[in-house]
View 1 (tube, rainbow, N blue to C red):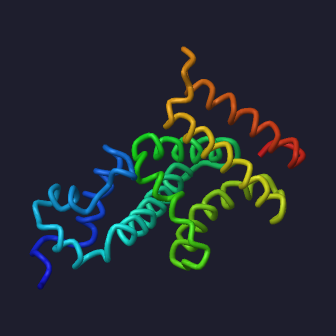
View 2: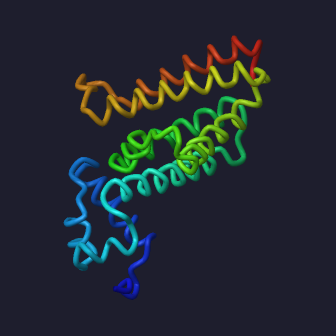
Length: 192
């Protein structure tokens, strides 16, 4: 059976990302995706080898878009401004694409070189942003772990509805980043 004209992997991934964002990654199914695309479910097998393969491709799709969002946010900025911009882009991506964001963390096969490279591309954006602080390679990697923990922790708690107090989460997020930046500057010995 040949693929339907006009149906290609990018189209399938866009539709899958919309469904995952609307309903959650766990509710994503090939049947619903086929209905969204107005095709029969077997037609999807011309583009993906089942639901696990679709979720893996969705993870790659999400990592590429996350990297692009963060890199775009950093353009023309350095130091604290770049850290703030990329951090806001990260959390903004998680807010706009909760299902796709979740897919990026579910696909963690350490033997999957393509996923590892896509993940590392996100790390490289942060590495370039942190170069302004002159921390050296090892300390930069520690700071990347810390910042990732902050960003993922905040995004995950927010997605789960964990910020129930009547306080603006954006203010909390900015205070958290300001505290991280103060520690980063103290570690680097000054301003960036």
